Length: 463
Image (cartoon, rainbow, N blue to C red; front, side, top):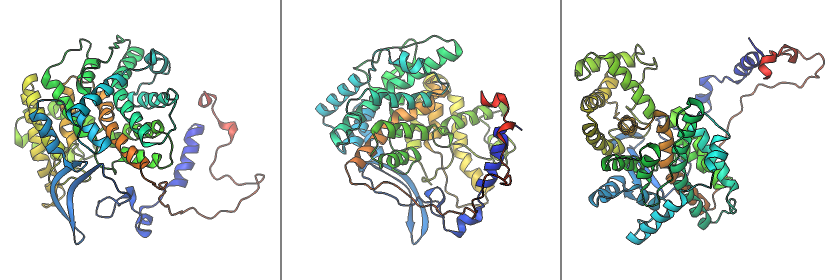
């Protein structure tokens, strides 16, 4: 056991807290109530998420609803679909300002986004290539902090400057994500370095496909499907981890770039931003182990093997089934399902899509039976289909979470602007200390508490 292993063992022993104490002191673990609902810690006008109703302390499942600035997400999507246009830019404008744009306002906003997508000359060389990392999210966070040094008004907190910075970050993350991907592939895997120039006249979704593909070609359905993904992921209330991180950090009155970099760090965590990757990996496992992926009974039996921890990763989870808030349905999954079906047809992947349909249908049933709870309200969530959609779009899996960030930065920016527009207090929840009482003793003659003498450090550990 090396120095760090020994020290880690000591630290682990001195940091473990028994579960009974959380109950004893009525701790809201994860800022959640005992029934799983979120603890109310703030107010917002940006968006709201409805997955259940609380009546006389009882949780009543309802069909899910996601509302952006008071407008049902379904109505927003139906609106730009009817007019056969892209919707992410309109959605970002709505989230940032609270109003739907007029035709002229949307045109001006699109032009501003287009102009701000461009990075400083040699940014990819001086920032992305010079300090290489194998993780795109890490690269994005570092790039955002670098943008701080290029902004002469980086610390100006008035709302007008916050809007400018927010639009700039929405624009630039859509360029940084593809650039970071190719720099990593080039630097670590000796692949071609492909750096296309963003096209001002294209939508965010079109630009992403243009930058990600060597030949810059894409179909209208591909671009419209990616656009829908961006709209669905643009915001999800103030309580999701990365948005709450944005609000916590912003409550200190730090700069916009530091807040968004922190949010990127939150989203990088696999429990937040990596769900669709887990769904795709689980479905790959099913395809590889089922004799007939269209046989409902065979699929159902294998789902029980996964729940029992006998198959896939042993975690006993059906990824993409269930949600912390939604119960009967996730509106984002219902919208994306139709696009996934169309894309599967265009790509010749109908049989694979059929497997998704079966798992979406049988997964909740299996969970209810396995948990012996016929009233358990679970359904597929947006991650169930988003990974399949990205895969159909030939988007590399390491880009899945960065695409989430490209969309969600619109929501982060909106919540940031809202906080800077109000006299918010610094966010500081309370913690109960359970530290054992100790007396300070002189260094000479101090008994070892399990720490490791410096002399035992291995030379290789100090490298």
